[in-house]
Structure formats: C-alpha cells, structure tokens
Image (cartoon, rainbow, N blue to C red; front, side, top):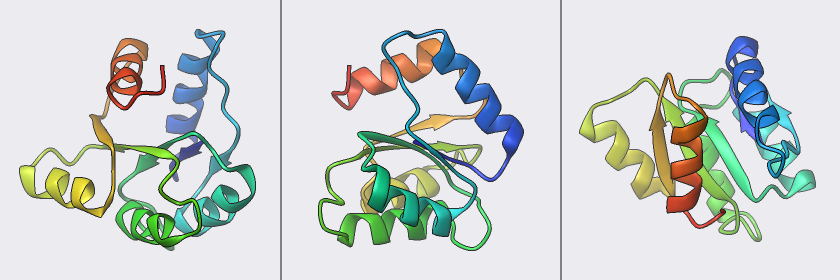
Length: 119
C-alpha cells in the first residue's frame, strides 16, 4: 500500500511497481486517516509511508498502526525528504522497519524490501 498525499508521488511509485511483475499495489491512501482505514481492510504486507501528510502524519499513523490488532504484521518503509538522524530515529522507534530518502528508484525500493524480508 502507498500512503502519500501527493498524487504525483503515488503515480511515480505505481510506475516503478509496474516494472516489477511480482509486485502489486493493494491500495493507496491520501493521508494518515485514510491509511488507517485502508490498512484495516486491505491488510497490506508492506506500506510505503510518507512522513508529512495532512490530517495525520506518517509518524502518528505508524504509532496507531502498531497498536492495532495485527498492526505488527505490515512492513513499513518510510519515504521521506527528512534526512536528519533525529527524524530517522523517531520513525524507527515508532515501529518503521526501514526508510527511503526521496527521490528513489526501483533498485532502492527492491533493496529496502529485501532488507525488511519481503522479497
């Protein structure tokens, strides 16, 4: 699942996934609240999560996700432009499995998926 408030980012990620025949996007969320609701129903294996979103940011989404029943199951990869150690540590402390710096490409996503054990 992709959770990002920018359509152009979601579109770019979709195009990267179109290059991989074994990857499937089960859903998209436009903000943290939308991501919570969709996570309950879609039960994604992996969530590519933006940090800065309206209504609920990625950090708060992740904290709530991890408290939900089976909320420990999805691998969460933060996708962010925030590159300071404090932001990264905060995301990992909240339960992120990995992070990717924007912009990224297919090879970076593939490497991160391998690191979190979904490939």
